[in-house]
Image 1 (cartoon, rainbow, N blue to C red):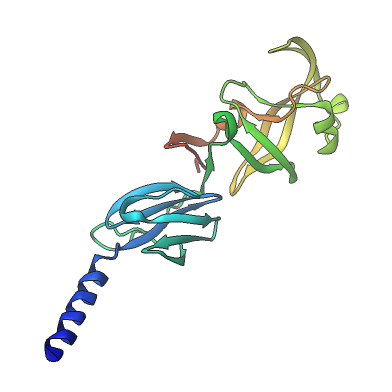
Image 2 (image 1 turned 180 degrees about the vertical axis):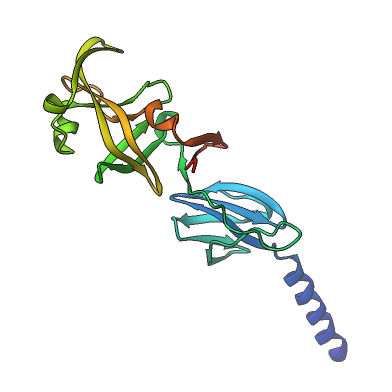
Length: 215
């Protein structure tokens, strides 16, 4: 019996080791990651569990912490195997935005290289902000803007049509973006409208919005 026990243990341990899922991180975003688990591609948000019980503990643009088989491990981004070798990284810059409260997409970025918080609004014709937000960004909208009247959810409001030097989300930057500054406190958040989105590639998939530079 003692002679049989060690080989049996070794065989059992090897079987358990072989049963552990093969996990690669092939996409990283703040609060989410795209995993390849035994060949199955899956998007997980922090706290979610995927195939074979793999759970995403945390994630940012540089690494993900996964709980695999009860053990937490840190993973960095890998290239995904395509059957003929490892594919080269995409030439175009892409970033992902996780859907937030109320089903909306909130994202940090910059306007004219100044920090800004955006609410993605595919129903807005242009990037839109209120007077206070424009002043904080150093935009002299009364001097450089063209007076106009805009239709809002609350009715008609006075505004100024301007051109932003730069709007940037992650590495996706667009120059010369049309925008509107509205008199008063509406909108309460800077709306990232179609004057930016029409000039990038974007799509929604499994609770994520992906934005990609066109060139």
